[in-house]
Image (spheres, rainbow, N blue to C red):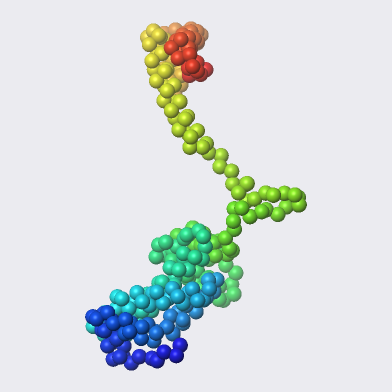
Length: 276
């Protein structure tokens, strides 16, 4: 904080020395003179719960990045150019470390993360009660994100992260239940899914090979009654074949029995379940 301020001409000369000649002493003087700016910007983000020295350190990284990219011939003050880099470095650090769950990766979501509290306070400054849905809609329109993104970010900012291994307090003092215990996935395991897919393909191959034991009428009835996506009633199928529905039922049962015997003979290791 005791580093002297730089006049415009001196600042320009130091920037030229660093850019053209790689003079590290010039870089040190340029950076030291702007550490006040780093501290001032870092102080704006102190309410995010991260240590102030870490924010200043990240801001200094952004300051050095600005010095590496600064073009003194554009006749722009270095502080004007460096402000964006300092703020961006601090914001990236906050997004990486504020929560173990990474969020705010797009520019719109970053703007939502850093402006949600301010926008909510500004919209409610008149003391009027506003429903959460209406509030989220107005903030979404102001930032340019979806209302669902605003609701999600609002819920994340409303409380700290909670470990899935954190115990759940209940009336039983001997209970050791954790939040993880209540996150049960009812979907089958990957190996079960793959196994079922393989078994299904195998059963289809077995069934297709066994259909050759049926005559033409039996095959028509089995296809219409068992293999089609939309099954045909016994009565409709009887009218189509010119026989009674009872006769269709008899032929179907006989055909299924023939299929069962053929499958057991050809594939004795569990093939009977295909027509079960």
